[in-house]
Length: 110
Image (cartoon, rainbow, N blue to C red; front, side, top):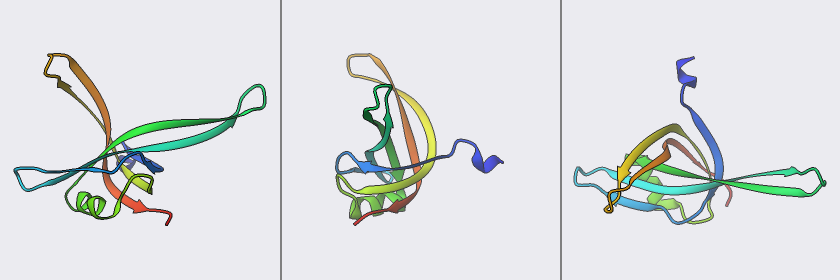
């Protein structure tokens, strides 16, 4: 059951082209967001489309594949784990962010 702890699987579309960072350590980092869509009928019988946005980061070989093949609008399936972190802005405000640390990627569609 340990393999089921903190596991996220999503299928969605990239909101923008991935941001690729080459770190001083030689590692490559890819940052992007994906949108997942869900449709349901409300009490009036109207179809409502709900879009959720998810921040994703990927490292190493996965980031290299993302840099080479992924662009805005591309449909992907990802698997990874949820991570939470905080940082401080230049103005001294503390910000919190939840991301998916992607370790598996499958390109879908055309």
